[in-house]
Length: 331
Image (cartoon, rainbow, N blue to C red; front, side, top):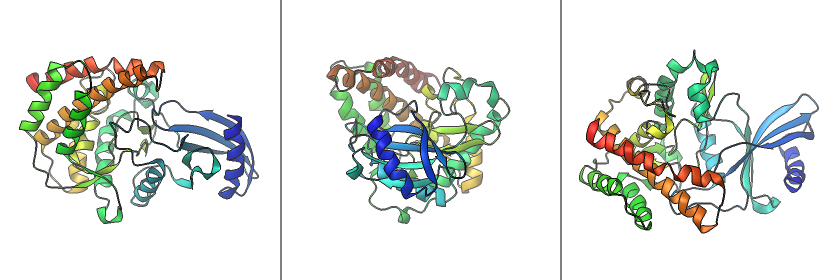
């Protein structure tokens, strides 16, 4: 940390002329691919709170399964989203590898909760929770309406692309899972026609949202896999059961109902949503998460990352099997 702190002292005056010293530097929880650090700065005026987000070695981890577009491109898309009114932290400064601490950027610190299970259970959010699904619908509408001609050199991924990518990863595992095999067949048989491409966040879910007790959703984080794709991917990913933290009857992140989100999206965008298409993407999203969990086990076994987090996430693949059976055969 001493090297990091020393380098940060060199960089911060480039965008904060009143900088005096770093009062606190603390790594924030979460982030399997990139790190986030809380910075408390002493300035000539008052203490200032920032977040420094970086890829330590300048390289992208776990790229075999997720289409990471690079941390500096993440900052650029957040800047665009900010200009179009999407609630995201303001970006102050972007750095490259030349400083010796990896690529990264400095962004605004926003008050609120980000840990998914705390958002579901924390009593301080009791009054704001009934509005969160509606807010998510409105925010997703804003993201999907950002003009794609403003976006340069970003990947495109449709349902067919996603199925091919995750099927390739799945077949690398030694142990076949009949529920996953069945789901792949169902997805290919029922694949929807792709008639619209929009900007897609790619990981819009409980855990990547900052929730404030008074304002609700105050920030959308982790844009590292944004792409052009089907807007239903975002609308359904937040409904995957794994993000509900045992609140199975509140499908939107464990805090709201689908219809509240859909109606708010329709009102904001002026577009009528296809509920069956949304369910298709929820099934695909559940399968994707199951395969991501399997991949966590493989990463642990390979020795690349021996953290207990990899194992604890990996075991959740069995939960997605149950969720897929429910979605395909019961719901």
